[in-house]
Length: 192
Image 1: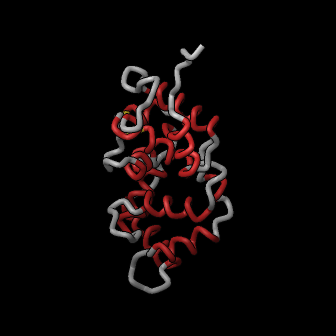
Image 2 (image 1 turned 90 degrees about the vertical axis):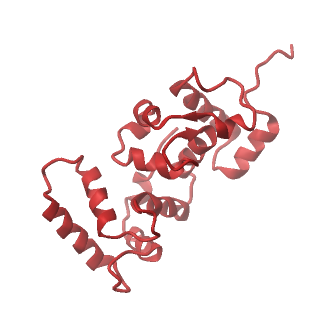
């Protein structure tokens, strides 16, 4: 009695519930999956500072987490959600990532993070180069699309969605495009 190993304190779990779209049970399930990636690095019992300081390297994240592994944007997703910006995920980064991709996350949160993922150069706009990089990832860098083809597609996307005519998509313009994509909500999703 009293020897039960506690992964998080009640206060930590309560804080995670307040900051995510998960229940306590789901948070513990997310931790279990996080720990399975690198049990040699992630302790069984997390102190508050370890939840942000213990990191799983990008290569382990993209290769050993099945839901991320198959996504063509896997590296970019990890970069966007990692506090270090390099894709090395702490537990809290991983929890945030799965929370945003959960069924419970509202559409506006998903759109915000989708914009960040597509904004490869982090300039607060999606330009021709950002769209080109997305096309390379979506086609798995095959020869199906030549650089000229990708450029034409990127120009067409900008032409169709660029309301203010500045040659790039602002967050509002991106949000408008996404609002017309009925399958966005169901595809921007990872089940835990």
